[in-house]
Length: 360
Image (cartoon, rainbow, N blue to C red):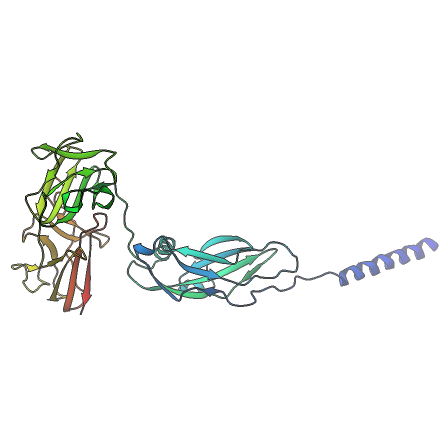
């Protein structure tokens, strides 16, 4: 009997201890961001000029957890439409910022890449939503902040040659460039003003200490550093080429126009562009029709002309056979609505031939 009473007493004691322990169990205390996250700008227009500059900083307050330990913060970005519903933020791009780090800055090139990866087309303004995740033993989520971002088209990086000459003081560090849009085949448009000898050379560095190309006669290039320079007959806006596969070069003096049934002259009369040596672009203001199309062409002929490639980028339809040949896949250019436009053709950067249409 004593054993039974002792057993009952022992069970009661253990039960009481157990109940007492249950009563002292702690629960996770709620944690949250004390205030909203902030963006350093409400809108950012990106260009190649701010690629290497900080253009946007997202900052946030520290989240305080019960345990004093490091907190890991992750920044998420998405388009606003994907931040709602049952799959909210499921497609977000996430970047682990680090332990106890309370801000993240974007350089122009990085924000440009992010915006296009999330579906904002180049040249088009679109919204990006940002939020922050804090984590220690559980997650805390900030409210979102929205920034309007306009990405710019990515410019490909091509091998370059430099074109120092009498027209610019024979100074390689400040010389215009030629770009190899195809392997070992370089192309450029360079304005050579009146006066001087009209001589120049090609160099593969911004100095005279590496390879430079002079005239071997008969349209040929030589790497003999003592050779004479290449020469054009006089002032003008020239397409220059260098084919290092065959060590040949060419030049073509050009003026530029637009032609097509979107233009005032239709397909029979060129509408001429005017060159501005200060801005290095060709322009014309004309009444254009959205029901037609046009191309840019040199010298009122179809030997050198530009249309659009599959990505909407300005590209050769025709160029001298020794350079690029003819490309039938290139399409014509159109204007979105009929009206008066200022049209600009910019060929000064051989890595990024481009044009603009501005409705007046």
